[in-house]
Structures are given as C-alpha cells and as structure tokens.
Length: 82
Length: 465
Image (cartoon, rainbow over all chains, first blue to last red; front, top):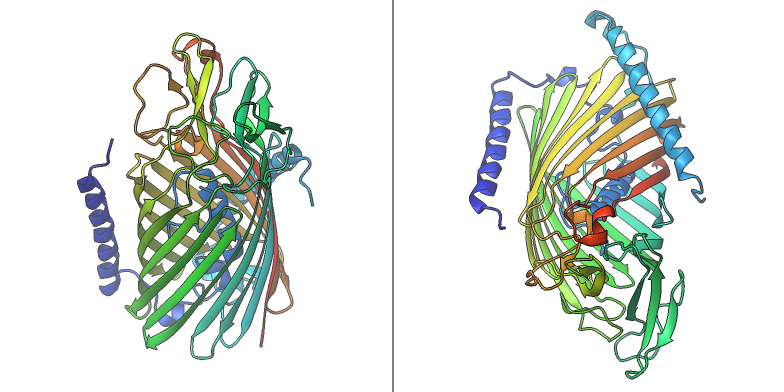
C-alpha cells in the first residue's frame, strides 16, 4: 500500500504553520526573554545537544535497530547497518 | 572491557533510574518561591557554554552488547571543535566501529534443525573471505564443485548467522561562520568505509536569528551517496538462497532536508521544532537476509529466498524538543512523529532530568519510549503455493514493535572546562510476530527477533587556548 502523498503534504504544512505561529508569537513579544534575562539560556546544561558524542552513539544504535530515522538531524546514517 | 553480565547491569540501571525519578519528583514538590531562585547557589548546572576562541576536544567510547550472544560492538570516537574569536567554527570527528556476534538471518524458527548454505568466495576469486567461524563449516558441494559455507540452527531456535563480523571507520567535518550579524552559514561532509559498504555525504545549512535572538530559523540540506558490495555479490531479490556467486555492487542516493525553529519561550524554557524530509533511491535491500518459504499445512521450511525491498523510500518526521531550567535541575522532554512511504509510522518520546549533586557532579536519569507499525511488505515467512509478492522482508526492524530505554548519565566537572561523563543504557524491544493462525508447527513459535541490549558510554571533554 502506498502512502497518500496528500496526507504527507498536509502534515508538512501543519508543521510549517505551527513554526510560523511560534515565530509570530515571538515577534509580538508574547514569548521570549530580554537579553538581560538570558542567564539560564547561556548555560552549558541548557544547550540543545550537551553531549554530541553520546547523541551520535544513541542515534547510531536506534538507526540500526529501528525503522525510523531523522527528526533531530538528517536521515541517512552513512552506514550499511540498516 | 567486556559486558559479561548485561542482566545485572540492566537491572541496576532500571533500579537507579526509577529511584532518581522518584527523588526528583519529591524534590519538585518542595518548590521555593521565585524570589529565592535568584539566590540559588552555583552548581555544576550553572556553568556557561562559552567556548569562543577555544579549541574543544571530546573523546568517547561505546561498548554495546546484545543479550543472547548476538551483536557486540565497540565504537571509539574523537572529535575536535576550533572556535574562532568572531564566531566561526571548524569541527572534525573520527569514529571507528568493530562488530562481532550473531545476527538473525531472516528465516523463521522451526521445530526441527535447519541448515543454511551460503557462498564462501568473492566473485571471480578462489580466496575464501568468510572463515569457518561461529559454528559454520566450509564444504565443497558435489556436482557444481562450489565451495560453500554451511551452518545449522538447532530445533526451536531463532536462525542466526554467527559468523557476523564488520569494521567501519568514518570521518566527518563541518565549518560554520557568521555572514551577517544574525545570519550564519555552514558546510560539511562525511565519509565512512566498512568491509562491504561505503558512504559519502555533503551538507550545507543556514540559520537566521530574529526577535532579539529569541527565535532562530534554520534550514539545512544533505546529499548522501552509498555503495554496497556484499562479500559474495548482490543476490537477485526473491531468488533461492544458494552457494553460487551473486550480482554486481549496488548504489543508493539519499537527499534530506531539515527545517527548524528554535524559540526562547521565557527565561526558563527553550523549545525547538524541526521537520525533516528524506528521499532515498537505489538499493535498500539487505543482501544477507533471507525469508523462509513454508509448507501451507505443516509450516515446515521448504526453501529460503533472498529478501526484497522497494528501491524508493521517502520519510518525514516532526521533532519537538524542550529544555526547561526550573530550580537547580534541567529537564529535557522531546517527542517525534515519523512516517515513511513503506508504511512505517512511529512515535518516540524521551525525558531526562539533570540533577546537580555537588558543584562538580550531576546525575541524569533518562527514559525513552518508541513504538512503530510494520512496513507494508513485512512478512515473517512466505507460504508455498501462493503468488510471490513484489517485496517481502522478515526483518524485525520493519515489523511492529515497541521499545523502551532506561539510562543513567553521570557528569563530573574536571578543571575549568573539562568534564568526564558516563552513560549506561538498557534497551529492550517488545513484540510478537507469531500467530495462532500460522500453518502447522509455526503457530507455537514466536518469530519476533527484536533485541535487548546494554550500552556503556564513557567520555572526556575539555577546552584549551
């Protein structure tokens, strides 16, 4: 059975709409932090990927043991393990 | 280091993870008023992430062991990032992999012993490339004179090829630089080589800060070229497993795109939403994997065919990640929805809690849940006498299953910018492919070949001028 392309497109558009909504909210000043309130954001513990090597290990394990990939980064994987 | 007791390690990980989540929940109930928060004592979680002008080295090693004597892997990695004073970065990473152990060959288990015959020589060569390891023997077949490798699976057991062995070395690099006050571009590439597979890729990306750097939009693209050259050539899909040499090497091309938005929601909360799309075309079949063709009445295996997968696959996913700093701890929560044109749909949810213990030590319990549906062409076996489908694979990775991971990370600050870290993880897939309506003796056998694995990762990172 082939996935209907229209469903995939609709979901992509929904994601894009969500992203745009977040961006416009930020523009209105509803969300966000003033530059002098960024102390917590500047911390190493608050970075999105604190341990790139551990993330890479985990992604490699999941890529080679599950059907899904991508999300956080690119799809491929660069190995013949899947 | 050898993980000889994955059971004990996994039990300890479960207990520690559960304990820490309970402790964190109890601590969270004891919330202080916000005014006290600014007077929070500095902890290992308050260190700043500024590496400007510094070089950071990060090396780590992964020890991975699957239960039941299946795959064992060791993967060391070394990476370095050079940070310029104007925000430019150059990063390089070298990774090696060594895998040994037994891997399911795709055949269904049976109530009697099963013998598998596979080629032993490279095409056009008389040199044996597969040693008679893992309980297999080299035999010369009467009539054809072909040298073949044979191995037998005992009655009732999952057929595995115990002679699996591979090594891989990979290198990747990237550089990025600001091209305007709020705009940054990056380019990168990767190359990896293993005994029977090569992969090369190139990528480029751009990020744009908006709203006083509260919002960051990002877009990146990647193109990957892969070449698969199995030890004995590439089998023609859905032909019978035999000792004869197979066809030429095959290629695959993958185009991927990731678009994301990162948003500072408030002083404590950072969120990221990204959409990724991938389009793979070319050879995507596993050349070593077979399927049983069984008798419609008794369920006994009659023959084995090489599996077959479509040459085209599109994937897309939506990933949402959050980092929340409340009190001294940092919580990370993420979710992913995924679907592809092979009919697989999945959801993933992850949570971790980084808890400072002292000014130099933190612990981070983590948990992950994953659930996927089966690919449209997933078959545990084929039934003799029925029309052959165009595509069929018995690979459990394409079947329906759930998986859980429990982990515990420990981080120890060393000097001003260094950290020693350890992560232990226990991963278990749960599924059942058996069916009471399966023919004959197969009805009582579970054909699910999912894994249970324990990983230990150890690393050290530091920065210097």
